[in-house]
Image (tube, rainbow, N blue to C red):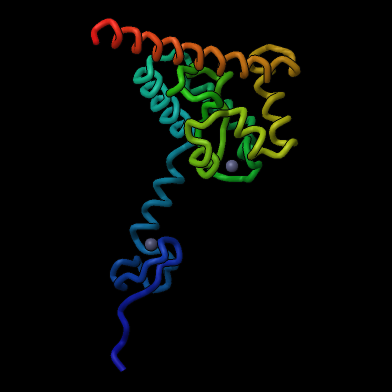
Length: 189
Ligand SMILES: [Zn+2]
Ligand SMILES: [Zn+2]
């Protein structure tokens, strides 16, 4: 029987030629070993700096107030204890804006938290209060609101009302723009 010169990589789950492994005894292919080494070298500080830079770019794109620093992001990641603010799983964390910048909300520490990639993807630019009510268990929601209240320097009982007010302001602004558009159309049409 001819020897099969392939091996399965348990990280990327692909079957590759043997020469794509450092040696036949390795569980991961060379590409995966390099990638994980790169990841390990990518320090927490770098991750925070990258997240802050990307958030600042997005803030500029949407024209929203922005003062989130790399230190702020590092702080958020640190106080999370490595756990997602939404689902409480231990996971690699990403920066999350509670109220989305795409809807006019600021790039500030009091509007941010750290969540896993899965939750980040799931919420996207959706309504935060809906997400809080439908998706989060009481314990996670409560903990998150306590953190946000302390970052905003407001009493815990006021924090949900602030979110409601901020979403209402954005909705009013949107309605005003739509109405202005209609008025302009009427004037020209
Ligand atoms: Zn691989
Ligand atoms: Zn999560």
